[in-house]
Each structure stands twice: as structure tokens, then as C-alpha cells.
Image (cartoon, rainbow, N blue to C red; front, side, top):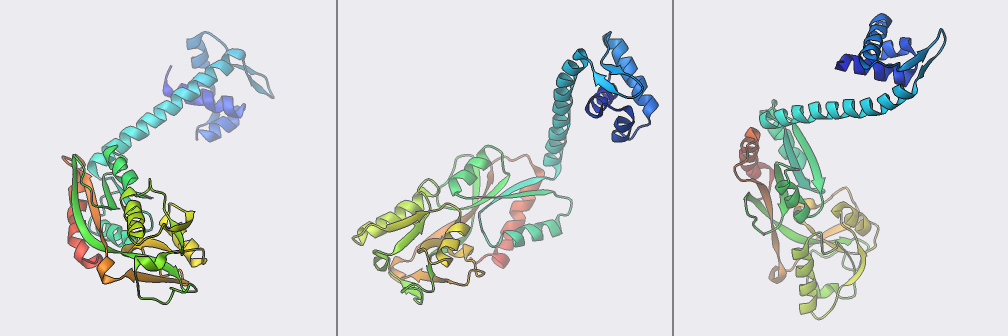
Length: 298
């Protein structure tokens, strides 16, 4: 019994026709018939009932098919995972950006231009905590996130300090302001992310409102920053964002700074695991460090 015999069996079982099975496997029909015959002889049982016009699975054949399909699927998965593991050591890099970060394409395209031998898998995730967890669990090799915290066994490099802004509908009474104070947000409709997405900045905003003598009028919770900006663009409310995530395609939004006394910055950080074995992580990290002054506002 061998893999070819099993693949021939599965093809005939699924097509119930030797000619179509042969086409499916890019083989002629005689080798298919010979492999099925050898398989049946080795097993000592009939797997098919055949006549001039039809092919049926026997009860034994039906049972055997249910087992063989699982075995072949597991084998294919094992081959793919082993191949990806090898590629990972030599070239593939799993990169994660925060959702809607505007400079990700510049970073990736520049690295690919200088290192065409590398293969990248790029994803976007909402929330710095989820991004770091993905790095720790080896779902990513290099990640980018907004935050301030340090993590054990994780190397970090601050790429820039990003200013916190408020996105305000242009049709809103505050929509023509260049600067606002937190006190001006009293009774205004606020669109904000759930606390679990970014506890630090959620608590910071709530505290600033509290220090100014009010609780925010939260009208909507939304995790993805793109979604929050879409709600602002529709005139539903105001939201706070990082300067690096401004979306100029949304025409009904004014991006407003906080007054100098209340101005707050947030670090944009690149992170990777200490003692990383993937040979291209160091290449990518060094590339981004070199590119940061060109593509990112420091």
C-alpha cells in the first residue's frame, strides 16, 4: 500500500468513474485500475462494485474512504506546515500593524525592494494588547503598536511620538477649531473604543474628563479606528485618534489638536522577540530603523 494507491482510491470514490478519476489525477485510466486492484488485493477486500456502466463503493469501501480522506488531509497539512516552517527560518516574516496605520505600505514596499528574497505575511489588528499577545504566541515576528509599556523577553524600539488628536465632524459647532480643550467636550457626543482595546488611553481620557468636572457623553463604542472615523464622518460624534492614523479620504472630518497645556503624545513602537531565530527579523528591524526618519515623523 502506498500514497499513489490511496490517492487513486479517493479519486475514484469521489468521482465514481474511472475516466474522470484519471483526468482528475492527470493519469491514464489503466494505471488507476491497476492501483485500485493492488490496493484491494493487499487489503483482501473489495472496495468497489463495478459494471460496464456504473461504479459503487462497497460498505468496506465507504468506511475506508472516510478514514483515508482524513489521513491524506493530515499528510498534506503536515507537508505544508513543515514547508512553511523551513521558509520561516529562511525568509518568511509575519508582520502586524495596528489597524489603519497609514505608513505600513511604505515600510513594507521599501523592505521588499531591498530584500526580494524575503516573503512577508502582513496583518492588521486592533488594540496594542492583542498585538503584543500575538508576538508572544509567535503569531507574528515583528509588530508595531501604540503604547508605553515594556514587556519581558520583548525587544522594543520607539519610532516616533504621535500626538493625540480629536476627529470632529466639520458640521459640528467645534468643527472649525484648530485647538480645543477637554473642557469643551462636555455634553458633546463621543465615539470611543471599549476599555479592553486600550486600557491606558481609555482611562486617560476618562480621567481628563473627570478632572474637568464631567463624565463623557458616550453615544457609541467601536473598536476599529476606521469604523470610528466613519461614524465621525457621518456626524454621529467626536473621537480621539493618533496623528499617524489621520484619514484624509473622509472629507467631513476636521482633525483638531488639544491646547498646549493638555497636549499628549503616544509612542509608536516596533517590537520583536529577544533571541529571535528567524534570520530576517534583524534585517527587517534594521531596515525600519533606517527608514523611520524618511517615512515617519520623529
